[in-house]
Length: 465
Image (cartoon, rainbow, N blue to C red; front, side, top):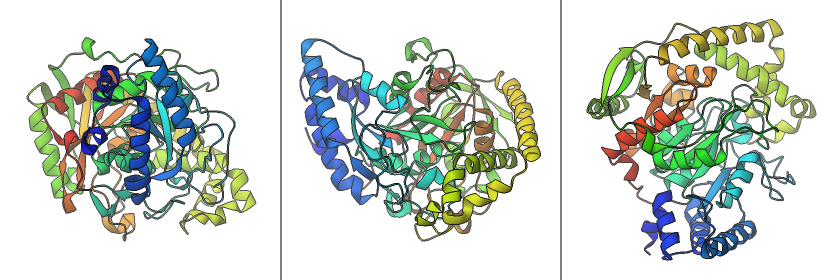
């Protein structure tokens, strides 16, 4: 099969080839490992190739499928994991030079669940150091170097899930696991022209993942399409006794049980004045597509200081999570100069301020829940701008108001969201459509996203690598 056909096939398409005998799990693993060694490393997307494990898992999947044991749609499919997820015996660097040799003797729950689903781990993928928790302000903030965007090598891939964004966007892995505390799945997905799903808080176990913010961290799939995201989410979701924050119920991806039209969608008013002209134009064009299968209504967010509350909670919890590292001085070995000192400010946050932010959060969550109860989803641009140039600081390119309110509100309230590609903007870079729903509504969000992708081909475009 031609290189480009393997590289950009969906999970279902690859699975069909495996089950028809047109390829094997071992051939796929070797193919995508080679693609990571070439294209992936060129984009600074790769930390560690897990070759020995990958080939062992691929041979097992091959034998199982040949014997008639089929573990489901991910059986034999290669993937990569953001390098803040433990994989037994391999380095888990958290994106930092000082922790280059850190290893754990167990798998993160999500890695273990994918193993049980027959998926094949082929790489640990790049991340902004400490998942951006030290306040990085420019792209060069990782031991692998700045994540490069497959659509324009002079642009950033987004953070903090930079490696998953680049690798999936470049067809170097069929799918990847990313994490989001505040924008770290949706932003690189939008920037790299892929589909990325942030699950409901508690939907997916964080056991074995680096802790940045206990009440904000989420782990989710970054894929070619919304359908792929649903397949991966089903495999990794569910309660876990090792993570008390997980929801008691599991998740089953049931696309056949969801409608394909007739949705009621809220269109968030305001904030479009701060986005780039192409981002706005692509969003308005996406509304035209949505209007063909949904009823659109203007909505406004309840009035809360979402950005301020989320930032204070994140800063306080990150300072607590990294207190030992802050005290030890190890952070002076980080790549970005601002990261070497950026975490100390969190140690000065008063308990009364943290508790006040948590009270605001509870009120905001209730108000957002009441709003979303009336809609299948609310839509807005995923990001205000396309990916920044590698040579510029974020504020210099996008301004201090680059964080859109739906992102901070959604993360503060633990709401699920997906970013899907909806066009191209400045410098030929992708833009994304953000679709947000009520807690627990992943199946409905995925239905809206699938309906949009059934009518557009943005998710099928390939970068000019």
